[in-house]
Length: 263
Image: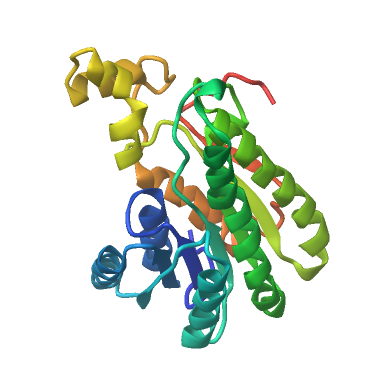
């Protein structure tokens, strides 16, 4: 399927690894010019070079801490200056720690708010003027399946990311006349470093190997397997495309069927 996004420009956050990297690589494979951002300059530059060599698309890395307002503003300014436009924004950030409500103090709640909600609002506000010039802008937020279904010990992620979903729904109404779409994607159990560290922590502590732990977690997934980052990235590429021009204000999970709600 021709997605109609060749030569467009995408900004992808937290893209030196994991889901962000998969999104950047999939977009680049479709001919999109990509600006990737993350905190670690060395990892970022390495990733940009690898994606560019693999896809043949132009990919640049610009270091940024999205919780820092000045850095975020400088990042978007440099991205727009380098390619002359921004057509697609993929908001992404590492998730907050897992634990019960009483285990987190106010500083941890504040950190989660700044990383997972305020950064999304900040980057979106900075990019909107550029998207309005395109007549077909796209905003895609990577959130969590915790906004669709209860996920044990995910109080920080659930609380904060629900704010992202609410903001996105309101924004979709506001920027619809500019033909900008705003959507959220919810990764389920996708094999990333975060899943390897915290997602299967209980199983590893119980003495299971990583392979055994992943197989155990997959038993509760209708497809009986852990997802691949590129499977989530495929949805992101579609939502960024011309083919998805009438889809906005939605929150779509990529979870192998694990969310049991009907709506």
